[in-house]
Length: 349
Image (cartoon, rainbow, N blue to C red; front, side, top):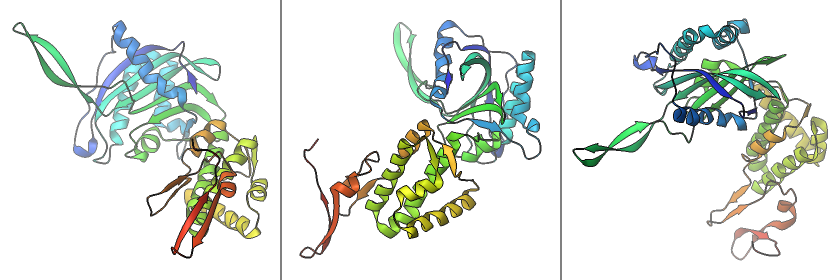
């Protein structure tokens, strides 16, 4: 989603964020971090690398006026006047603190960073990054004591995985300011995205593709598998992936005609679409362009495994739409009084 080749850290400050639910209190810094070369070179890719693979973006939301969204206000002020950076970094820390309404919310270090040279859609821009470090790892530190080396265990930040982070770009479109987010500790999905950032997915091909594929996945779990079995479920999911791969845009009515042969199955899908929209408060578009990056991500969630009570596992490739119908045959053995699957193949791999 972004390129960081020319990215630089302009300003950085670190605060300690507590948990309001547990009666903790924040500890706020008064001055910026002054990096040495080694720590700077390590921190910059650690903070930005996760966003290179982010496929979907968000936009700020607010029930009355998006200009009243706290983070939208603070970051807009920072872009207009960098001298407000320290003041608004404290406001951001306190706003995050106010969202900790559960014992599950972890305390941690909060890094607020002003970046320059972030490339987004071939344009260089600024960004405010907000990163919460919730988990620290143990490591050994050796030290010299009376002419002998000893060892002590200390805790520090691992550079392997960022816990939570967002980039608020100084870039906007017709829907508003572009926001990117990562969250590798999804213990409370409402806390970071909804309560703290107060953002919604951008209304684009990424969202439309994700919603449609999620609907197909749930339809396969709740309707096809109970009624027709896991083989038919796998066939449906593989055919869905194949349709998305073969078409640059999805036409809802064309999808139904191509995927389902019988009218009753089309009606089931139609009814489930209405149920899914109402249950999840989303609108499934009848026509939209396919997002290949979202397709790649979402198809990995499709369950095409058939687990049997005889400790046999049959795994069907979701990218092979004909495999389940052509090379997998289901039957019943009268002698053993058991069901069976017959698998056809040429060579073992």
